[in-house]
Image (cartoon, rainbow, N blue to C red; front, side, top):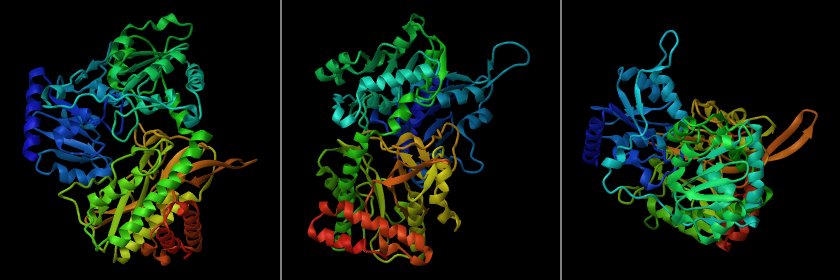
Length: 612
């Protein structure tokens, strides 16, 4: 594979030379800044061999580098070996961000090329600021480095590139969505006006699916359709591939004053639309973090804009009662599937051959038998021993580990159902483990349960709460290089914003006040390269608690009900309050899930959830 990567990079460099590009940048994203992308958009993987879900490849004439975050350091080091590509570990001391690197490396008059449709506006504007200089006195900015953002060189080099995905969309009935599209559009238009704009350009796929109460199948594990939206005070223009429009959706769109347009015509539409034809400001509300740089440059070349968040994002994040009720039911069934898997694994490891791949396949099959199952919410992470130290490890047939009755096994998995999106991680003891592993496991559980038990005032963000999960590990000098929690979609993306729980926010990250109805993960962990990985993840719902003269208090309800493996619990690392939290949680696990299990499974569950 290393030789293939070098050949592909050589072909890319030949194209760069033809068009006068000195450095070429390939981000991970599709045209919509999605976290997971269809095979058509996996250019960074094609040219680097790195398969993680986040990373940017930068290619010079004789050099190439890849930037990725802490979740993928171990994985990237392995996958880049022999390729000649230098790994840059983001947010590590001494590691420059790409704009700073380019600013220091590129010479006056050189050209940086990229496909502006696959780079977010935020990143594109950051590059602009770094790579241009303003001369003394009056006059326009004189660009130090030329930015060529319409350079899709990968399309010229990539042999056998998959075509754009296209699948018919499905309209959700209101008994599933809990709210009509007309009602959502009315509130969104009010938010547009409050922001001082007249129009809204939407490119974020899960926001569009939520707004129109539809779902698609264009991105693996994400039930979304490639599309754009442009909202005016009276209509909504919806850009989608014709192959995805069913007769039912066409009628539905007409009822809701949604004008259907071909997906590929979005740029032409923005160039030709008469922004002054309305009665308002003529300005377009733009979320610079969720539209592409190419869209931004096209739009701002024609009209004024208001920079702000998509109002759809926060409205989508606060789940309505219908959504929450359906999610609660789905999570009980999904939790029971994982309990059945853990029981099966403990009973059979060492007695039959079980690999990381076959274990994942068995768990996936249990989910597929749940009523309303659509697909996985992300590829199952099935990691044994040292492989679990890679946060987003992916087991591959032929090179994966065989499980044995010893050590720790981590499984992070979830499903998409007609009623919710699930995500859960458990670390399972398969046999003898070290005292250090028990310490790490116990303190991870203590942090997870401590955060679960939080009571906090409205106005708090995840930054205020992160320490509750992280402190037990910080106390022994251990950290995990990721956030503690992310938002969860409703029959949508497993990673959803703007809510999150983390102690540090880098540029471009959104920090949102936690609101009642938001759904968020709680997943501290320990990752020891060459030894083991531990993560315990539950999903929580923010709820309103007491309201008094001090303000509105909030708390968390739990959606996930799967036992925490007591074989790895060491009581000397727990206070009485910690033991009480674990016992209360385990009592709830049995209460919420036992009805979905057979007699043997229930008997085992009663044993592993008995009070400590």
